[in-house]
Image (cartoon, rainbow, N blue to C red; front, side, top):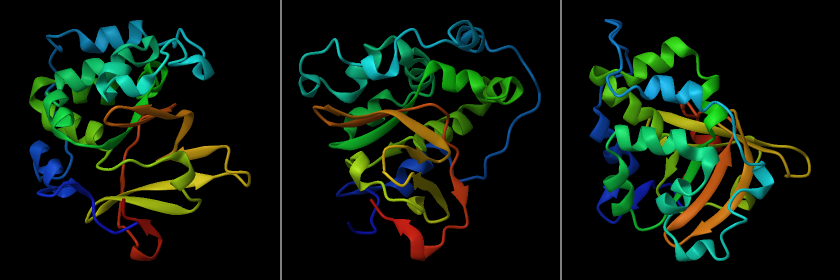
Length: 212
């Protein structure tokens, strides 16, 4: 594995982050109602109706479908779909040749403190919502077997996602989120379903960074 985070030959992960702006993540505390009612819908859909080990079992060949088509078809992932659409990131994902998507479940988003989620959903904070969602996208395919204990996945020059596994490698956490359904292969990438929302850490140490 090399140390690049290239989305393709001409785009790096750092460049994709600039779609959301290069400024530090700050929130606009001038609270206004979310006109799309996404906030309300998230907490109305706070439960995952399908068992994790049954997710995507109703699809005979997942590799016939692209990543976002598969995500849309699962009832546990409706919040992620709505937020990706709200942040206008669907087309950006479709431009990527092969990628890995860590998808939080509906319950995962319901764990986010309500005041923080409310801030992210405000129209003026769209850039911050994009940054949070982009932390769940890796610009290349990574299987669960490639996720090593006590390592870090580098996202940009100054942000990373820590990876931890148990002794048997059967329990994997990425950015504090446990993978609950792994290695769903799509036509254009791989899906790992996670039980929390990932927030990248800063101050990357070069000696334990995985550059996918």
